[in-house]
Length: 189
Image 1 (spheres, rainbow, N blue to C red):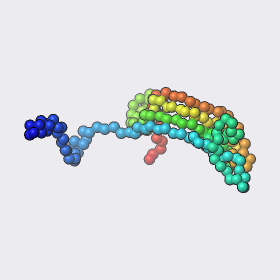
Image 2 (cartoon, one colour):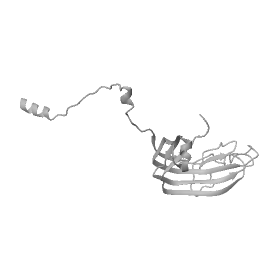
Image 3 (cartoon, helix red, strand yellow):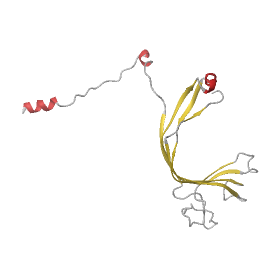
Image 4 (cartoon, rainbow, N blue to C red):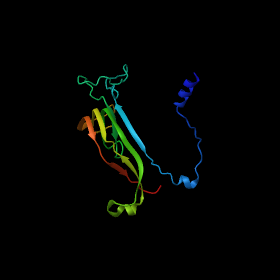
């Protein structure tokens, strides 16, 4: 019996426990590392309907448009982003309307990068850090659609609303992306 126990103990792995120890300054200066963020995302916009419908009155308050099928009479089933870059109420609105769908990506990176050469000699003069956005290899789109339009008002429920659709976009599939996007700071912090 004792021989069997000894044999079993001989095959058991040995575990070592080490305590954390502080590094001296000269040892710490030899340590190299990389900074940055690796992002993945899956975003769905208005899968179950969108903005308030226009079939409301005092007795029936506005409800969310839940039926966005082709048979629906109310086609405003997605999100809406309205931007006014003019002088307020007297100028028009640039609109992304009926935003719907799903997109996902994996492998977008964010990090800082020093530009001190290249760019036809301008990098030496710049000699500063930039934000580098590493584009993901693939972005997948699932029934993504939106309308680019101009509008007289920010909301379809505003009095005097009139909208002209310029472009309707529908994307379904994968887009391959390569490269980096560099964001250069301006001004002094």
